[in-house]
Image 1: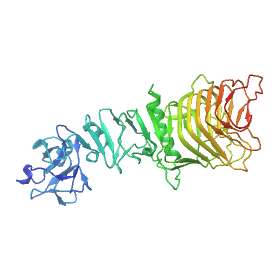
Image 2 (image 1 turned 90 degrees about the horizontal axis):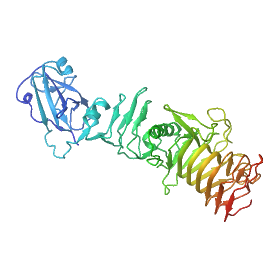
Image 3 (image 1 turned 120 degrees about the vertical axis):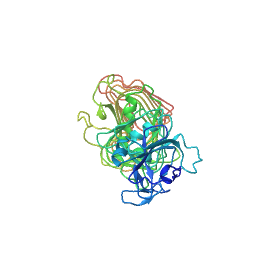
Image 4 (image 1 turned 90 degrees about the vertical axis):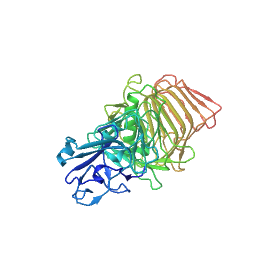
Length: 448
């Protein structure tokens, strides 16, 4: 809504020198700011009346107060009274700015308030519209507030502060969360956009590792309090995302890119792109060396993703320093994993594209790998440990030409792995531990 002049009040007909005026949301005691003109560029919380009955700023500049919502006005005999909101000479409630006809009584404008908490209180049962940066103070936004953040607006959680958002934000693919504090809450379900945390992606491939991790930290917080793992999907809507470190995925995370965009992740570090991790207490903690039946990462979905691993050969251990990295996509102790329309391009030698260990109930559909003609070593898919109820369908799996293997099952039992209509070079079902290492390949091309 546009900023409009306030309606008539007694100071327009009489002189109240030295008095102070301030405004509140109609029907409440929630303070709102006034603008000094119709642009809304300068906002102040109170104003003094000069010797001629006109309002002045602290620099003695005269102005007419402008508001953008229904309001209550109060006049106080001193600045101290105005600050304390005591001894009001008068208060008039339920006024409208002159010319307000656009039916915005149920819209609360965040820029009218000093903090997010004040705006949220005023917006209960209404729409809260955020058009500028608004400071936080560890606030909960309940589901009874309809939140809309337009381009240029943001919720800023400072260090040590927590914004708990329990309503779904209406926003485009731009940043709406700022600051070093924590964003959490159930978000009312629905798709989330990684751009809201600043991972906007671009043709120039700006590094967005920290922003992606911040977005997934929020998602993990929501998952920790949810039993419906189908409610949340993190969308990557830009063309390219440059990352320089491994991204942890925990229970309930669904990641996808729009199929028609052709976007991709470029991993420049000698680390995996994604790996399975549990989540606890506001930080990611690895779970790569635990028994598959306890503390596992479950219900993870990857859809329409292309990963271009441009970094050196993956080396080193996972952050818990107990398990060596072994794939661009690295899942250990994971169940109910679904991968569809995912491609991994490899450029370094002796590197695996996809690594599974101790995984159960896995469905991989239209997964493909690519590597240069001089690439040697590595597997398109390597599986170890107890991998049961794993189905690969319509996949094109290629490893390095020197080793030739696409699928490696060398440890423990893998008798429940099925390849259906896959083109998989050099399938190796061997088992060095003496357990049964044969799976099933149906209507598959390639060699075994």
